[in-house]
Image (cartoon, rainbow, N blue to C red; front, side, top):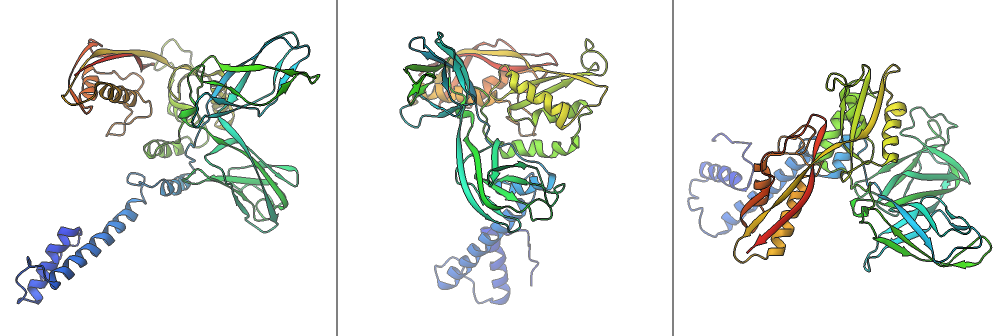
Length: 474
């Protein structure tokens, strides 16, 4: 019998192997091109073998970070490392509330009041994060609203160990979950390793479909609840919530002052909403998960500062510099530059979250000081003319080119080597911009008048998309 190549397992390879085997065992079978029952059976075996081997390879590839393609399997791999991939992050905005006329008494718009974007179809819902008080005699108040909806669900616990309750609504937003058992709040923990039998604790896990499950202890590590379990949580988030200025302008309901007199009011966001992020992609997880185990819940090295800062939801890139990189800095001092989701200037709240992460959750050394600030951007203005191929619509070509530029300047984008396309201290070459526009479907050629050459940046600077003005000629 001839040697069987067990690595050749696709449809064609199995066909060759079966044909060799048949010629060896059944020499009278010589015609493999006739549509007869024998050849039908041979090709059926090829098909079944090809399908089985595909799924065997698929399952094997799902066991490794470099080759996994299913989010559910990636989450399983992350659990081995103790890494929790970022889910949806909600955008926030400063909302200006204006009364039609001054009220005789204070007007209070309560926390949780919902406002919407002005879209007629599928408007986005935002909620007040605190009471907005407009003092008597005044007409304007400012409130922070969040792209989220508060949900409430009630379950009946029976005291058995390891009870789990799967929440109905999605996508789940972490950070604002409140669990009450018989009216008493319980605390959320990462795991039950340090929980005792009388510790009122729970954990939250989020699946590949961004539905959350609340899990309680077994009575030895963490209490096993009995009675009514009330779970209050939030859903929403994503980059879709980073709406432009003037987009949040719909408020529904009847409002009164403290004396019960009805008031008329309007709302508007004078600045763009920011901070909304989509979940980490598989490529982002491949980049971040292995790096997460380097820090070991502390911040010591320069790389630790960058890794731990990027682990804060809302931060997509970070650069840490010491006196070794910037001679103007003091000894035992680190300056951390952060890039928020979508770029631009980070909010004070986000900076404070990063500071808390580095000071309390993954603390720096006692004698070391640090500062968190926004990144220094170098805008890359792109101006030029695109010559489209015959038969292509100019507006579609222009839209595709603008989308290609947006993808290029996405701070999470990785090149084939696994390195960030846009990085601190990394130049943007004119040839890169030419190539990404030239590769857009329908583009025949492109003539750029800006930039006129490569855009170089300093060690503590990062390129950013500037003004883009592309004219399409058909």
